[in-house]
Image (tube, rainbow, N blue to C red; front, side):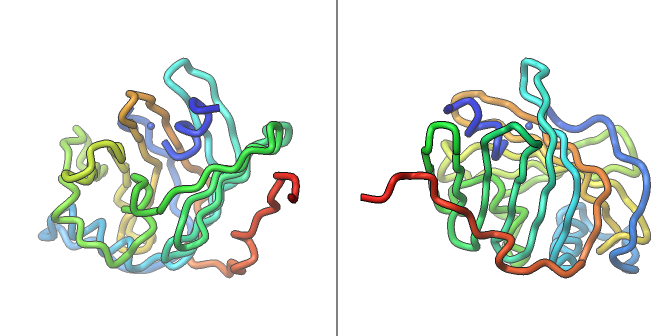
Length: 210
């Protein structure tokens, strides 16, 4: 259960980029901008996003599913059929529901590495730094709360794409928690700024009512 929880919000830095640019913005990337400024511009330009995801743990086991994001603070990981897990962010907290054992775990979004992706107004300067990618078309940033290392570390990968919001295409991310649980999320079929209803981020509580 704990391992699956780590996987659900967690990822090695992404070395493989997903090709293709999908409609979602016409902002151009300014070469004079710093990587953090480029990422901030992208985050501010994206209100919603949908994508397919592949999640791989450190043992090579993979799960797939559909990701839906709506800023600020809302995200949903809908796993493939047969996987009894759901992860939902409702704007205030992240909730992981395990329908097999009827267990619900909940924690503030700000305590999760995903908080960097979900808050477009967050000042990245205090929590993030650029990393060398070895590819001029890739932008990598690493983010963590220096006051709370127990929240974990996230490495986020973007590919420069003129047709994407802010000139960047989100490729995926890597998270490493305090227990050294590592997992990779890779995205495909990204669509930006499409209609997403708030009810997408509701969930059914499997716990018996008292």
